[in-house]
Image 1 (cartoon, rainbow, N blue to C red):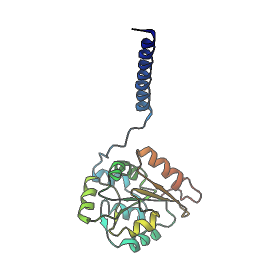
Image 2 (image 1 turned 135 degrees about the vertical axis):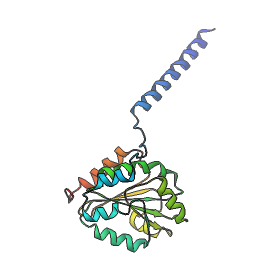
Image 3 (image 1 turned 120 degrees about the vertical axis):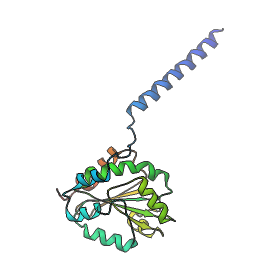
Image 4 (image 1 turned 90 degrees about the vertical axis):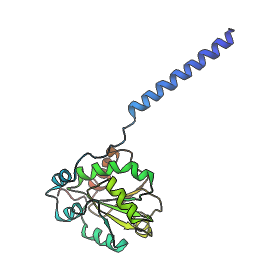
Length: 204
């Protein structure tokens, strides 16, 4: 083997080693995706017991698909005025929505005694498919069925899915497009945009 070939071979080996090391470091530093909640419905109710009435009314409708469209959703938001609110727009056909639902399952239980969570099933052609989705990915709050996509567009100012909207206690709004890869990332944004923002409502 010539000196030139030895140099090329060693260079290729060095690149391969660096690539492997880089992939290992990326795997070690990247946060693991959220896992689906293992809590039963009874355990969720127990953890959220004692919530303020307007939040307890959401928990009582856990996993339900509600009608009424944009009007009903706006009336619900009016009833929650002064409370931090997190709204997640999703659809049963949306792969990224499925990937982020474990984060919402867990965060809504951890934060549900002081933060209101609401879903919007937007631009979904089938209420039956949406209900099946919620049975597969149970959450501690209801979603409003938005067949036309009107409510989702009005609330999130976006035709994309998923989108999450945060309201702080003073009604300031922050909108984030795209899925949440982890519960930690979602809870960090809840803290930043709903709980720690100016005008936050402290406590339940």
